Length: 282
Ligand code: GLU
Image (cartoon, rainbow, N blue to C red):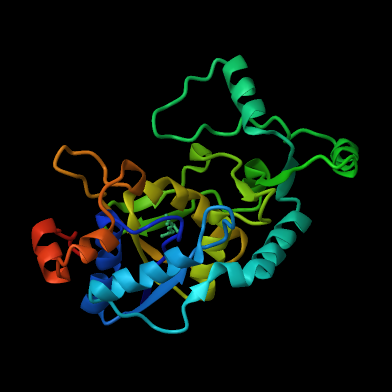
């Protein structure tokens, strides 16, 4: 058994990350599984090397250990692009020239009501462009991302795909949840969904312990696993920890970083005692 913690170094870790890392690590300890750390730093705009270093310092402070070398996604961009190319050759991706604003306008025109905390599903504006139109726009230098053509993908897959979640049980995929997601971003040539799926397979991760906020993404990952003939790991989407007011702890809410807790002279044992984390039944 192999599990992993896969943070993105876009900021400092906060107690919610500590919970997630500890959940994966404890799972590994309990099952005598290998535990890996993967740095998901494909987003060159938002990720910073100093945050990667801080992640390792924070995790060591928490008492975690992990195998070396640590996989850093930024060192493997060509590999993700190669996989994207294969999908494109199979007719599973299409170029999308829409800006965020274009998508917004299109959605409003179709009477779409935005749902809280949920990214809008792409309305498919560029799906029907003809080959020549695509080529003309690319030749004219228009920027584009590549989206998964879900309809096409489902045609190549068995009808009943599922995965197992240790907390939530057997899940049948709901392909339409996230729709035609972007697999190749215009700025970095890959995307979270693509890279995480490729790396979980490459690192032979058998158990993915991560937050409930990524539950819907797993539907996409399961489709990619099937398209790429990758093994299917087992999942455990843990509940997200909340603060005293029941609000989700996230770095953008400005909850105190682990670094700042550490620098106040609080020991990891004191922090863990105070946090009172409880973990799901593994
Ligand atoms: N890198 C992702 C994040 O920081 C998590 C990836 C995963 O666990 O699948 O949110």
